[in-house]
Image (cartoon, rainbow, N blue to C red; front, side, top):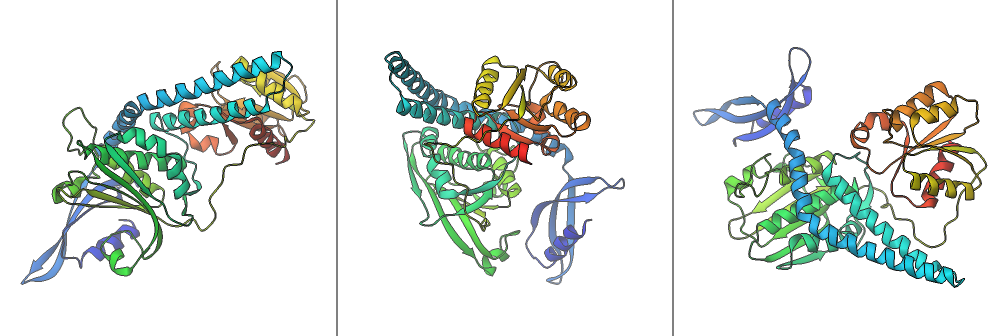
Length: 443
């Protein structure tokens, strides 16, 4: 048993209450084996003389959890699909309308900067919708940043109202000061949405959903009865409902994978299990309070980030960073190649374009001077952008590589390979591209 787990068992030896938890041990071959452990005191004449430990190998269960995780995500997408389609069509209507107005102005010799700003704003909103869908439909590269919980919940307001429906009142109580925590923003949204969906399902006849944000201090007494939590300051997200509530038996199993109180076909039982997995993987803790007929409250505690939250760069006039170096664009979509080429050339760069990695390697091997390669991750021809970058690093020392991706599938899941390269997530603004190109060239 690893030393950390040994100390854990020794602490439990003095506890008179039965406990159930998971831990990992090494087998004879040195492999880690996940176990579900049930402990309880051994009593003699009313005194504790030992500890009884029953451990069950849960490797098979862990494998099943991974297989069914996609099912849970698709369930969430199904619930959001109608609302997302509605919002996306509204944004497309906005974009097409402003494009038509701008074309009319152009035909009359008029400039249309205000119309173009509206088009860009609507496009950025559309990109947020696609990122949310991708987050639920596949595994993503975890990219924790410092965010303000207040701002993050505000950004989700419209989406939350659509998810919970019109018969449930949404009440959001924000903190008066910034609550900065370090977490992947997409995973944070998944936590909030899953908790909101769980609350909605507990209120089939309507009710109130209250989301409260605040800073809290955890004392030693509270920490002593909640395993894994240390005393100190935390930033809290709590989600409360006025629904049916849960019995003690249900509360004890609510985070178990595949456990559900819903009728067959209405849920996978992975929603709250996923919430706990995300919260704990991001350094947080989750506690549930509930009574039958009195609703439920889920408290999520995150340690403060200790620094200011990241802010989105304001719109308006942007300074384009340019240069005179030679850039090779590797992108199979012609329209994307064209707009990237135009933007880079306007910034002063000399630009070459190809549609796959093999053509890129051919140009690099021809003797043509190339200072940096801008490549999509997913490419045709059997050689992806990461593999291209690895070959460039080996064969063409001094050539910088900047990768970009809208959906990189299994290649993006392999975060180990991507970690060595700068990745620009599509869609991106032209100033973001030029900033990234300049950063890579100057590194």
